[in-house]
Amino acid sequence: LDKKGKGERNVLIFDLGGGTFDVSILTIEDGIFEVKSTAGDTHLGGEDFDNRMVNHFTEEFKRKYKKDLKTNKRALRRLRTACERAKRTLSSSTQASIEIDSLFDGIDFYTSITRARFEELNADLFRGTLEPVEKSLRDAKMDKSQIHDIVLVGGSTRIPKVQKLLQDFFNGKELNKSINP
Image (cartoon, rainbow, N blue to C red; front, side, top):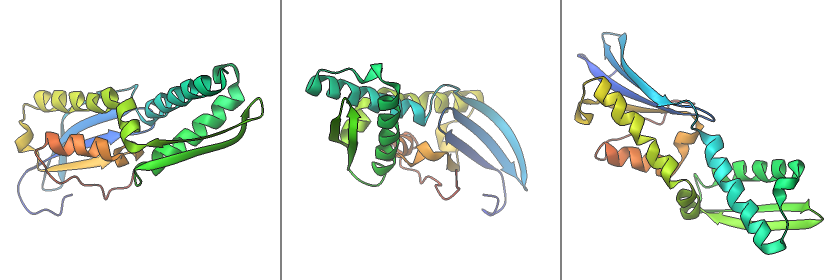
């Protein structure tokens, strides 16, 4: 980040991990970092997106087979693992399938989810990531046009919808995704 020439640069760090979400605004000048503001949600992250999918499929299972997965911890664990995998798949594909043999009472559960449906299930959570961004800007007394760089950190920033919302908020500005979570 500090290789971008002279002068002051304002950088927004958007860190969406497994269980927490942080936004920081830093000013960098001559290799010196100054934190201008931080905001976030200590209870928002990838696990929440998984939970929405788990609930979605628990309901589907109940509709199809008249059985409640919530009564079986092992079945729920297996479903959650499959949902985590599906979420990762949906970052690069528009559809993911879930295939779990003998999930509950000997029933094989084969189903799928589209990226669009995943985005619908999490729409409010995804949109909610912009509130701390706005708060961070207010606290730093900056307008979004004053941000030079946006850096994405954390596995959940790979979700295309999260990237799109952020990019749209910053009027199409490029996001820096090269930094590993």
